[in-house]
Image 1 (cartoon, rainbow, N blue to C red):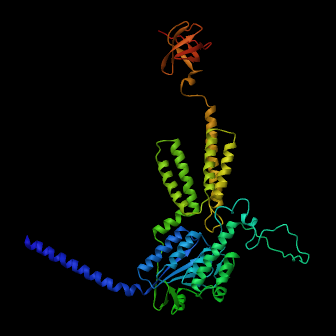
Image 2: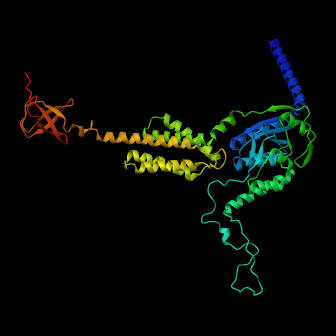
Image 3: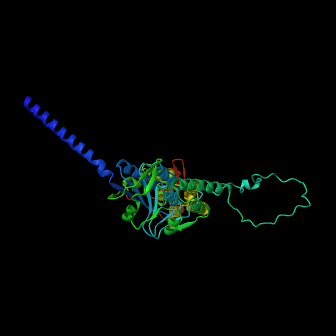
Length: 484
């Protein structure tokens, strides 16, 4: 027994020692191989919560693996300001160089993509690509009601006018045509904030500050060659190998310290979106979030109208929670959400309280308007598809129209249950009686009252019900004698 235990202990010690040696060898080999690679990801489409999550987690992986470079192949029409700023914050605080590369040919870095290019340590573009049009789009409203409150105030540095007469020697100043400024105070504040933000990025990276402001105020755009010529970007590369070749020996500033890039012999390694990024991308698609919301609402309505079904209620609750999660990170308009709920309520009310179409039509109108304004369609990639809205509006209105028609038909049908369905029914006399007796109806014997004498087996019609007594009358020419 002692020998067996000793052998087990020796074997265990040998296994532990072997594992420790292997881990030590692996650890010693990790730094050289890790620093000899450049990690790259591909961002194609609108910049949103899913893109932000994918970018930040990929950058963290590249940093943890001690990658020498982090490259982003970019092709975007723009996106959400909040997601773009989070990405830029990650770039500015990164401990490894971040290279934004607008690729392939025909790609663009519009709107939010322009800000990301300016924030990157190195901005590169492929031939036949473009950037710019960085004017911010205001979400949810068009400024203060009643116009621009600042336009009614005297301009800065000028005193309010008085009633003093002008000097005789004074000559009227020639009038100069001025372009009308129809922008509200909120719009000007938004644009000025964006200008200050992109100017700060341009000054930090030593790029063209004047054109950056022009891209915001005038939505200016540039091709790759013009951007290189005007010092908006750092280089134009035909592909990733050419990009790495041109990056070699370039000096970048990271955390206030200059670093010379050594890109010779770097191995390119791609970080593809994992299941979490793909799932988040699907959930934050405005069309998917819209469908989940409607499925959730209809599922709960069906569950409340048919308690105990369970499946519609469970599925509806899950879909509604997923939709609410998506709405939390999407630029939704809560007025639109409220109009959708109101429209569904009105269509349901039409099914239960027929108003000859008034409630139903109003519900469809509210549903469509709410669906259109639910998402900010001016932000690229974050609008609900109009055909999808039309399809759901038609299906919803058709569904509740069918319910309404079925309800009206049910009201016209004769009563088939309860005491009301006994009136007009035909019963059979159980025994001879005059005034009061017993009749057989629907498998039961009932006390009956008749103003005419009745014979056993005679068929009678029920006139009314008085408590548990049936008032009957004989069916003429329908007397039936039963043989004893």
